[in-house]
Length: 121
Image 1 (cartoon, rainbow, N blue to C red):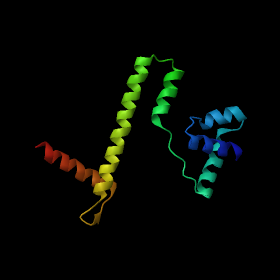
Image 2: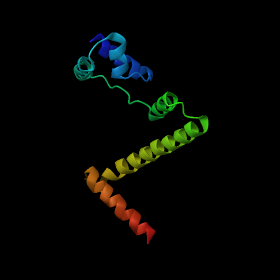
Image 3: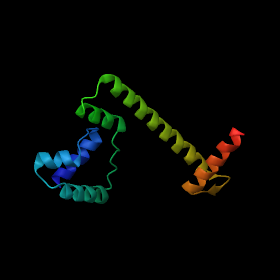
Image 4: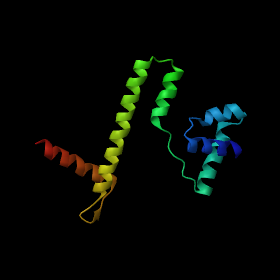
């Protein structure tokens, strides 16, 4: 349980420690940490923030000894992806309830695609 609590604390602090990192440091099986992590999250109702994908790019790039120009390009690409995802989620949320009707995500996406095609014409 302590290892799972450490993992949660790392996530909340924005540290990029994985279950594998903690398991190796504490000599505990990853499966046990994962199970206890799930129990803590569920039982205590903890909302753990998602890992920042840009930090993940940095970690991988550093591990591979990638030169700075490529790192910068990868950061820019990931930033663009994250911003695009946020924009798409915002648009989808705005269109989920429209005209007093609540729609599924699939229906919302279909409508947005049709609207985009209509604007293209």
